Length: 279
Image (cartoon, rainbow, N blue to C red; front, side, top):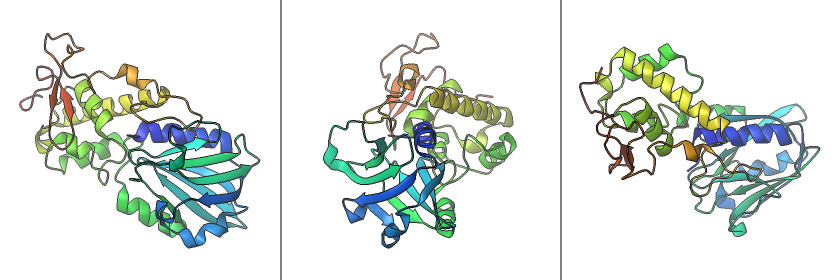
């Protein structure tokens, strides 16, 4: 479930609590939780955490050891979480990695992932660059508006699957695509190549506003998401359409929110989000 806002909240908390701390030990409970780089695990002993970045829905920890830099990239996937030691979990047997630190505000960071759709990757700089190129498109928080417009005008297909295509736009999943499209008054099945420039700009502004508001609220705690310190995201209370099937449209148009089934469930108001012909 974690999407871009949740991953950004995780990265912010790691910077606040662990930046500058020394990694003393890293326990890996099962080898298959590490996608690549497991033979380099011993290098990280004694390394210092110098940076934390978010790429799409993943969080990258940058370590420095005797002038060399390496990275631990955590995919949050559908159920992956990075948690501090004091944060309780429902199923502690699914803590697959424990990192022990000194010199920070927290002494331990755990990787909890019951369904194991996500993995850790231990990478050097060249490996990180390949990882990013292979997995991530533009970042919707930092891409300039003109670049976003150009990208959209060059694409075909349906709008919502494009917003969720991680190699095109990194970090938006089913929750935030539903919320963005409703606020922008765009049907999820609109043809991308038929959107006018002004409509794309409106989509861009709405996308940025929704994602930034969600980050400021700590993300959305739907199902299993918790921040590393155990706090729940409050943006769920601001969802207008996601999970609201059968409820009145928040725009008070007199229609009910409907659920459309395709690759992922879409929640729409068919009066406010028309398929074709909108400006």
